Length: 195
Picture 1 (cartoon, one colour):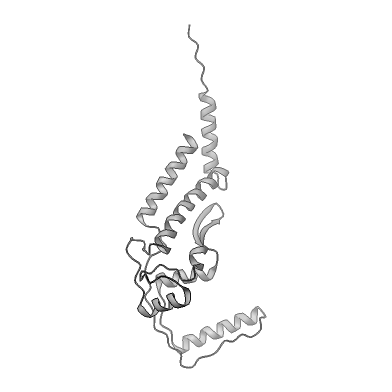
Picture 2 (tube, one colour):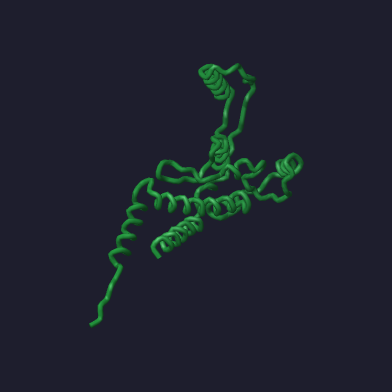
């Protein structure tokens, strides 16, 4: 007579434990899974935007004007390449990172000024008039007073006028290729986890 032994109960117990850990917010397996996927997306996004100069649809973001290109070369020792890459001092591209938000991970900026720059580059700006500029100055001065900061050099310009700018459109949103990369990374992690 042939006697068969199996460890199927142990295998299913281990798989069940790993699945529960992945489903538990803040669980070790879920954290590893989400962080790995986010880092994969970050790498793709950084190359696409800050090196290749491509938007979400994988088309060129834009081209620099001759005047701006000259400033980039003379002041910041950048190349003569005309493609827009959202990188002048490399501050934004170095600040682009994976940010933990509770049990979720996002790709964004640690520095709020870089976040504002990214929004401005994508969405553009509205035109502003003397009245709008003056209201902005008053609001900033009130904020300084709340924080009890010394008066800074906020100058009320009487002839202020700024034209609006349309922006470059979606750039930091994941492209279809990057979304597919995320799926492949998730599949790989699941295979390694349960394979």
